Length: 145
Image (cartoon, rainbow, N blue to C red; front, side):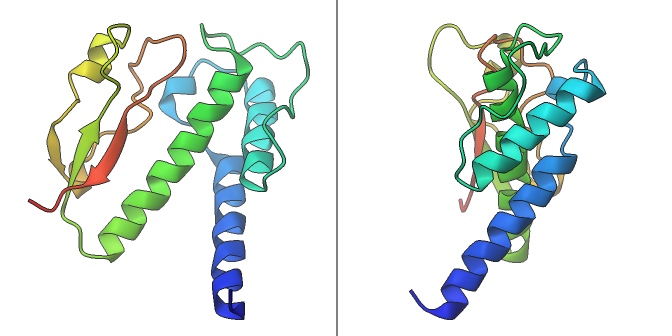
């Protein structure tokens, strides 16, 4: 791997860490600032390859989600934002939302599945109205049709 490739990887990691430290996906709107700070740190550490267990054992999310799930929602939000920005820069004009086909997915997420959106109008992911205790499992792909 050349120096330019390593530089790109490191720059991407730094950007992801920075974004994780300021992320507030609306799915976590009810999480207190104190808890959110710990969860953000855990997400940032995950982007550095250092795992996700960087919060106090007594941290409460104030939601049905565990701390691990809330960290995953921050990671997902950062990755989705990065993907959207990259797709826009690459000329992608539409995105398709995909989801889990399991029966336990919530209705809010099921309503998004297999829908195509102009990239500027793509819904927020993780979906703010998701009620699944394991967090939103929706994802987006660039749509070229």
